[in-house]
Length: 305
Image 1 (cartoon, rainbow, N blue to C red):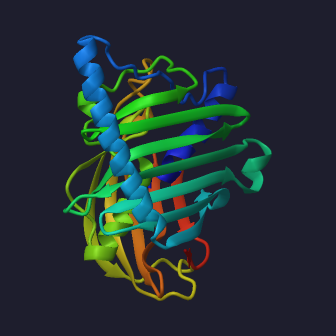
Image 2: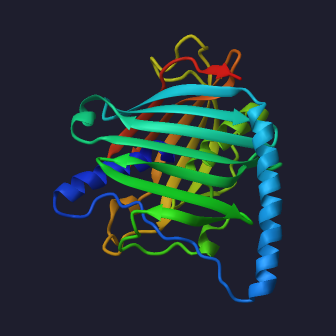
């Protein structure tokens, strides 16, 4: 869900930059480990890195043996097709990997050129929530390169690469971002929850994109027919969850009256697609700046080894 609204925010910021302000800034700083307690810390870090590497290799081997689900989504703003997203993921009982490629489409592509890739890996907790291990996003926003890489240690996202450099924005401290998820973890977590329990997890969640910290709350709203024209050939009944996402930290210094401080209300629809399972078929969100955004499944997903 933040998948579409975050890109919408970037488009809005590009318009702002044309009015003379700085536009989208995907910040950067290199996380450096302290060098105090040199000998002891060096040994402990090496042991920890070896254990993490072994865990990552085990998770990668498990994920590689799982089928890959691929889906294509169209993202509309005010009824116009502006973005396309190709999503693929592998879900196991306790591990996941996901990849999304997003690019501008339609008339918007004549003015703003975006091509972003986001990927992440992690595991599922007993309550169905995703716990990320690693996240990376890179690509081009209107000829401007950006790159973010985060690793998760003890549930805390640590930024190791962030380009371009951080601009005039308040810091989100490690304590504040503890337990926060990335966009891949949020989306695959939702799919996993619906596939295993037919319910969205209603416990409060946090989302951190390298710049901004947001809260997310969800509420199960039962089954209903999806909106007219939403379904293709996979059925006529959808499971729904309403959500509220709100940025709480990571604002620019001059944005005390920014509309982005307002809550973003939305809804997500899932359908049980034959041979695929529960899948996100539609997301709607009210963005404070861009208005009504719809992300909808364009065709029946596919699976491959």
